[in-house]
Length: 96
Figure (tube, rainbow, N blue to C red):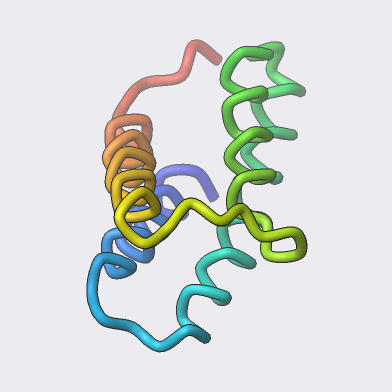
């Protein structure tokens, strides 16, 4: 699930920069919540608590139930930063 999921999620986040329907953003939030939650659990099990905490924080930020209202411009910045980080982490070798 690792590398491919990170790349797909990064692409979904980069597409958020375009003029998309509101439903697309909801879909990205649900997919992000699930993926970041799974990544958090995976890294927690590997003893990588710092990375697990980052993924857990991202899961909480992107979760669709209690929306974090950052405004379009700030969300675009978050999407780009997280997308770039996902791409970098997809090609970075894990310790385990």
